[in-house]
Amino acid sequence: MAQPKYRTHVGMVDILPGEVEKWQTIERIIHEEAQKFNFEEIRTPILEQTELIARGIGQLTDIVSKEMFAFERGDDQYVLRPECTAPVVRAFVEHHLEQRGGTQNLYYIGPMFRAEKPQKGRQRQFHQFGAEILGSDDPIADVECMAFMMSVYERVGITNTSLKINSVGDPESRDAYKKALADYFTPHKNELSQVSQNRLEKNPLRILDSKEEEDQTLVAEAPVIGDFLNKESADHYRKVKQYLDELGLAYDEDPHLVRGLDYYTRTAFELVSPDLGAQDALAGGGRYDLLVEEVGGQPTPAVGFAAGIERLILACDELGIKLSKPKSVDLYIVTIGDKARSWALQQLPIFRQEGFSATMDYAGRSIKSQMKDADRENARYTIIVGENELNEGTFTFRDMEASEETQLPVEEILDRLEKKLDPQE
Ligand code: AMP
Image 1 (tube, helix red, strand yellow):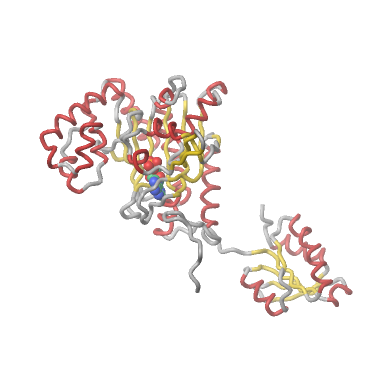
Image 2: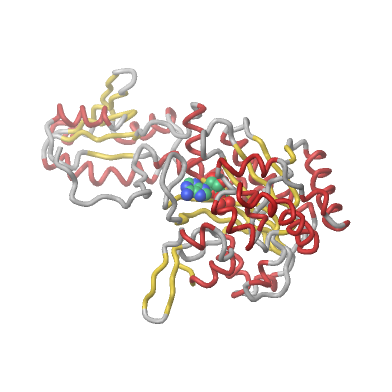
């Protein structure tokens, strides 16, 4: 085959028929679970102001410092959104959503963009679903977020996961912890990777996120934030664990789990799957009580999570979980001659109105190749129509599975379909 002239960008993939049905299933499950949890959907633009993302996520993060798809147009600076928490918070502030009263329980599904090195489970355009609860600092909100997240994986059938949790404290606890980390790492500075050496000065917390081999031994022995939590943060964390226990949601405490961004406060969590290989994080989240104010709103406590849809589908594939049925159509009308074709075109809406999927040949093919096409389309039934059938008003109705044929008028065909098939909603 000739090489195509145009291709997708590296790290960006087409989701083709055959695969896309899995996405539809996942998306339906997310919408259904969101409804059960009383979350409302929000859709924000793909492009955001670069400054919002830089402030929202933090200048020192990998995402902002080296992975942004950013460009200028006139005086405006745009970025393809790398995540959706900052955009949701922007929308919350911009539209004064707090005025609707109560907490704002929002969820989203959509593409995100990060110029990372592509590998299995890591793309440059990928998709997340996520949720944010804005306006509550109650640990119940943290746990409801986690429960919503977990409900999607449970519905899909991914149960072999580990929910890791930690508390990163509030700014007061974290300042004390950062100091302890700096005191611990500084004497070993030369043993750290170059990246971590830079982080030591700017934000030693982020060393704990390091993926560099040479940092791992030192990181494993580093002080843990649990020893630096003030009473408020410790109480909050204890309550989160208590509610998780009461809900029967299993978790593993990971004292080195940090979301290395300054606005994160208290609860941090991550869902990992042993079935995924190197990129084993399915989802992550946490509390971010300072972000709304950071991007210009009134102080508003909030908590949320983001989950990767590609990795969810990868995990399903690994586990042999079928997310979609093979494609099929209820009815295929096989036509012989022009009159039959225009008759078929007029009949299709009748079947569709009754809720059945129905199609016909669009290419003027022979009966034989139309029958082949009906097979390829996985048609459950076919109607075969030619001049004689039109004159007589009865048509050959063929059950493709049973290989049985009957001569019937259209009304009776409809009747049969209704008895045999559940119309597609
Ligand atoms: P984050 O927003 O970095 O906390 O990521 C949340 C989740 O999104 C991760 O646990 C992954 O499942 C998914 N994710 C993040 N980055 C990528 C990527 N480049 N490709 C595919 N999935 C990703």
